[in-house]
Length: 113
Length: 113
Image: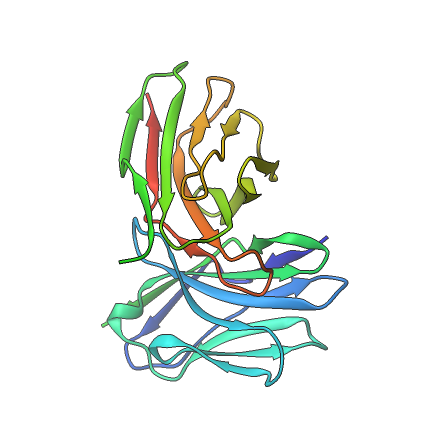
């Protein structure tokens, strides 16, 4: 079975500060990893994905994530956040053993002026 | 423009009534999904369909039903057997592959009075 743990339910940060949203997964087979963003009362939008190759993945809106197989992590980072980055962020995993995405419980990022 | 539409955006129903949520996509995707979102719980899979006239239960299928008569459409019925139906419902679609992102609709917020 696959699972995803997002360690922080809420992350407040000041504008222009760096941020890291943590994600750990468990799966017994090779995985594909995703980060999605959700603005209030909207659907989810893909930020970035890791399928294979380079462990550092760059996405939209200046976000990046690093796949760490030994620590089973896929943390999301941004060097300088903006007010407009305030949203909920979801980490998700899919693997060969389950033909579906499993989502974490989400991290609410709030950027303060 | 290609995308996924869900209607209505807000839906109110009396307890004990069945209600059907619409999901349509014009992305020519084979796979479609229904998720339920509750605060602090992330997204939970209700049903998914990988091909027309076929669908599988997800993690929380009890009290829900679906049909997939056309590739473009995947309606979800919330029945009176669903004990706590008030939630935000998201529909998604993807090419039939684990490595490809899911595209999400804008969601329907269902409130049962």
